[in-house]
Image (spheres, rainbow, N blue to C red):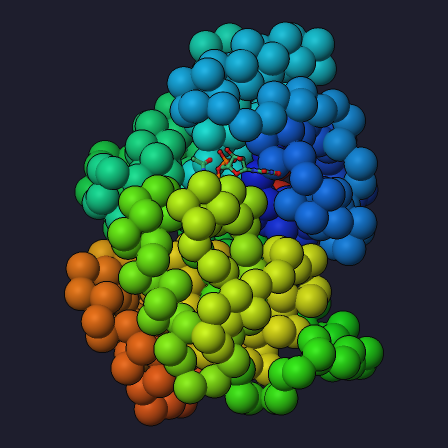
Length: 353
Ligand code: UD1
């Protein structure tokens, strides 16, 4: 069986790592990179560190407005699907690369499987929400990470195409954590174990309005512990444009980290402040408290279990929320057992018959 994976943005490279490994010896695997993320630190370093094979194809579409970026991928992917003739196209998560690949495949009658299907924020301002809903309804096989995701798909009439496989981010995170246990690294200069926060901000709703961005940065700058701010290129660009100092007060702004360095920085921190989807869950899996600067989350289990707190409209409570007391310990495993990639390949192979 020939499976063609399409990836393009940072979180998709992380999800691809365990899938590529699980595919070895079981299926022919073609990897296509759309080029949505292209910086060394946003792309190449993930392939190297996580042992992902070089992509077979790279469309190099680069940045652009949603329509132009998605459209360029759609045209390029159609040609590549025709060239490779896969039995199934596997798409990951909720980026513009996901949607483009799903639409390109379904139009030429190639079955589509969606990994991380069924997540919903119910917030139609988020580009990821359009991408998820449209991809799920176009796909033939929905690979859901959680029970909540299965429930969403069932309530949208998609239950009979759905398989609960677990979360592949758990697979890769646990593998990297175990490697770090065997081979510990020094902390970045000036940081003391358990005495700093890790922060990331990149969502348009937080970065694009200068007043909001200033309020977020001011709050981070006022925290009592040092803040390691891992600045996504979008944040860097908008802060420069509006003259906002990203290294004010408690903050030290650095480039984004490679995946193992990120996992290490998070697991040794006092807490995470983020608007990323993946990082909320990584913090939970490492049992580090998280504060999410968004009105809602797709990873509701992290909030229900007390390890994640949402702050959005009223940013004045951000600092006190970040510095809240530690949550109750839990041994709940809402994100699977670290073997989701194998179950994903099982489901892909079974779907052929
Ligand atoms: C994308 C995904 C988002 C995911 C995020 C992870 C969509 C709609 N959004 O958002 O779900 O959480 O990736 O990082 O697909 N840029 C660079 N170099 C790069 C990549 C981006 O400089 O390698 C800059 C460009 O100026 C670009 C901006 O960042 O305009 C935004 O990049 P884009 O890929 O459009 O979306 P993200 O915000 O990264």
